[in-house]
Image (tube, rainbow over all chains, first blue to last red):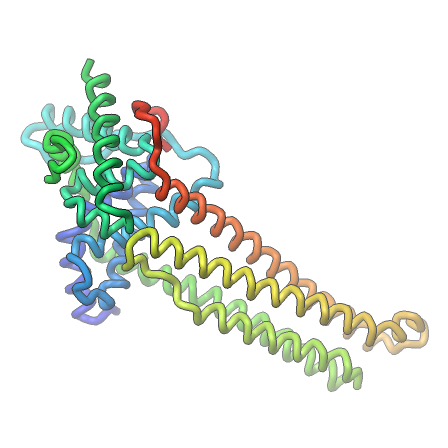
Length: 169
Length: 203
């Protein structure tokens, strides 16, 4: 069994950061089951590293750093594996009604797939921008300059917007 | 919502439409399983080395063939030391920024490869030493007691198994290092093209 403090940490991490971890995982892993496994793996890594958090950055940045690192190690292993299964659209969205929910789920799945198709340098910045991180936080998470974040952010946005427009047409 | 590089709000709204949930019991189970796997691997390696070390000692006692078990005991003790050092080396948690963590991981893989290289060199030296010690017994195998020949075979097989395991670990470490270097290189480079992503291209 885990100590009470660790269990409380886990509850809080799940409440506050699990959706972000799942979205980050899905933006790099096309297979839904593997993406969920990766998100769980990220959450375990965050939970394990949590006692070492000393306020060196914001909590969200700390979680994103660990998540991005786990994703990087996952991808660097997966590169040598056979092709992954095609994207499935069984992602759940919590919307107002079933029809609207289905449309949003479909659009969300499309957006995730488009993000996944971006080159890694743009993708890493795009997912953090979509998560609502500031340029300084992204620079702090990835270890690049804010200038590089600006360039990549602009290019990623152009590429995504064009692809989304293509989709709507 | 970050609008520093244009309007991301509509995309971000869509992005946040997905909200996954995880049960703490599943995360605890996974954490426990990962820890058990690591412990099982370390225990398997340690007990494998301990068994061969004990085996060499038993052979030495039963056949009075002192030189060869002595060489192999030193060899296994050295392997255990290398393994202990490699297991003690802390792995990056990812708490630093991504590029720093990737650099730390690559450095760790390089260090691991260096340790495995030392282990391999020591294995070849040990096999050569055993070859020299055993050459007389092999040349006059007809008059050599069978117990000594069996001892020679058993110890050589154990050392060869260590060499194979070393090669497997080296191959895995190289693959990990190449993958990390590739990812780090992609992260550092800024793509020039404005090509439009297609969902079908997603990996």
